[in-house]
Image 1 (cartoon, rainbow over the protein chains, first blue to last red):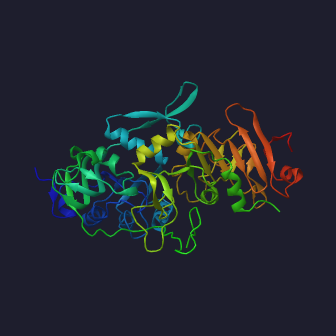
Image 2 (cartoon, rainbow over the protein chains, first blue to last red):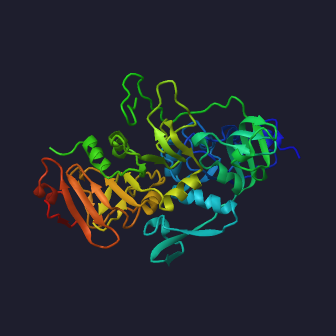
Length: 243
Length: 215
């Protein structure tokens, strides 16, 4: 079985439908499956529900699918950096379901692991708990949250072999490994495509069973949302100067 | 005269202990990392999937794959580890992080915290704040004592809650309060900032609180 496809469009061929639920990896612009997002934009599918921690920024990442009005609803923890998002939300064109970030991550992990629901302290006593089953366990109040699965998950990895075994790089891992498990179909873009055996099996984060299709994206352009640096001269302890 | 933002951060740093794993929020809490005492081992956790991070990178060495939860470029240190968002929040929710220092819009005398939304305004989302306050062992709020003469230390929060009965300590520009969030023992003023008076704090605080005998 050939998992590797020549480009992002081919990797998504036959998978896209109006109204589907798509999970997209990434935190801010770090570790987002940018080429796959572009291919979804070009395919023009509409009324999408997208599960992603954020919604890109104007003109980058999922922000592109807002500009084309392909997204009907976002399930996210934070959407602050996006003017298009605010405009469409205030105009009633876009729905948002906020999930606490850890609850979102666990809903995806649970969905991929075949767990339909779980109890968490997060959000107990807040409006997040309204309308949800709550239970007292060992004297603490817990909120029931549901596992999430997607019609399609699109993720970004640093390295993958042709079998779909994946390795991520630094904080670009974030939501990608759980989303890989929670998609009925998962498509991964990888910066480095290698042969089976080239990755030390002890180092594989996402085993190939979760990944149905792969596309190689060499020379991926990566974006920095908040460029913070320190000067080479003064080097006090701590976080340095924001410039 | 009251505490500046840096002095509030310096005061918050006194809550650090050797061996602590700590999550710092955005704003004044970030400054706390400048006041980690020399010789003390404190590992900073970033909820996007990193434990142990260093200062901002030197110019030209920024790595788009290496950011903190504020989406700022940071650096790796020898103790750094990376993990997924699910693992990150397992660490937080599971009570493995010792201390969370974060900002707030309102804190109530029972430890309720509001810091994520103002009804009628565009809501950006709670990010990881609800998970942090529900899961981390000790929660310290650092904030201005009042906002445009509106008190922020209240009997009950008027804004939607981030967490119910979650705050252990509040550090403002005027002083430090402790809150007995589980025992129901209420709020106690335990320190005054230099130049702050008991009368000034009384006039700027809606919450009921006791004043420590030491004051």
